[in-house]
Amino acid sequence: MKAVDPQQLEALYARGDDPWEFRTSPYERAKFRATCAALLCPAYSSVLELGCGNGELARRLASRSARYTGLDAVETALAAARKAVPNGRFVQGYLPCDLPGGDHDLIVVSEVLYFLDTPGLAALARQIARRWPQAEIVAVNWLGPSGNALQGEQALAAFAERLSAHISSPVVRTERYRIDRFVCT
Image (cartoon, rainbow, N blue to C red):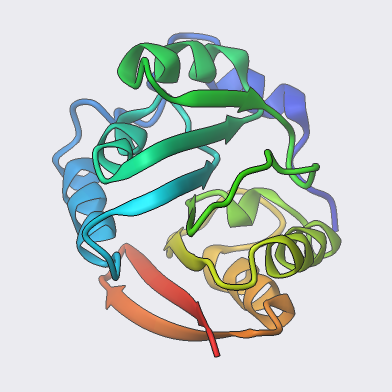
């Protein structure tokens, strides 16, 4: 099973920095509100968002944290995210990779897990569990066909299996997406 190739991700942004219409879609805005409502705390010291895209969810997360770090594979997305959250820290990286350091107490993986393959998901989960064992982890997954080797729920299950010290709690499930929260046991 193969992960999505970096060139495929670049191609998604070839026509602009908002290929999923994060800025204009009522569906995306509602999903961002639901994601923020799923968070356990009103504020965090350090948020790490994996697959931050153009920064639309980052704007909402950064307002609830002292420090925000976003990671994405595509420079076009990161340039837009830097404009959306000027005080944020943004790092280019293709998952699974070494994640940016920090004392992250919230890690958000919104609609990126199904871009990885099973070994990549395992490596990502192990790194998070090892480096931030006390962090709250929020995973958002689209439930429709991803067009990738793994679908949302398959990717979530592979990721969850490797988060050894965390228990999963489904927070929201709609026809189109689900939000799960993982907390340390």
